[in-house]
Amino acid sequence: MKGQPVSFKKLFDKSRKVFITQKKTYGIFPIDIGLLRSKGEGQFMVIAPTAREAGNYRKKLIQAYENTI
Image 1 (tube, rainbow, N blue to C red):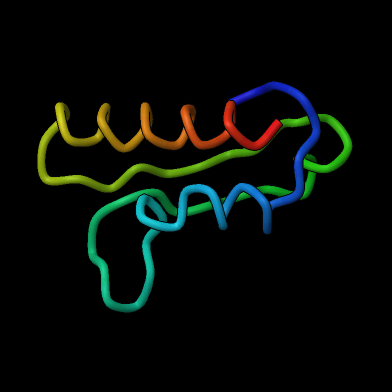
Image 2: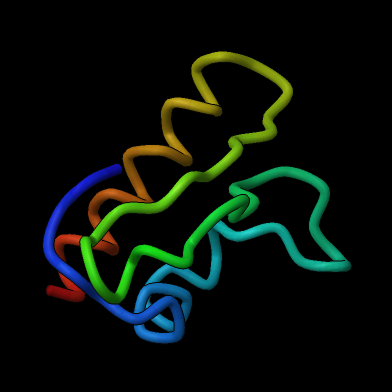
């Protein structure tokens, strides 16, 4: 995903339900978010039981990002 700079904390707060936590086995896992603040770029891995669900997680993260900037 590439866009406007944003802090990971703001993005996580807006999309907490899609990120993988210790209790959740499916969702989005941040791989490299170091450039989010400066360039608005990040790398994320989507883990889901089906391709359709993976696409849904991706859409939810993009919506959360767009609501954060």
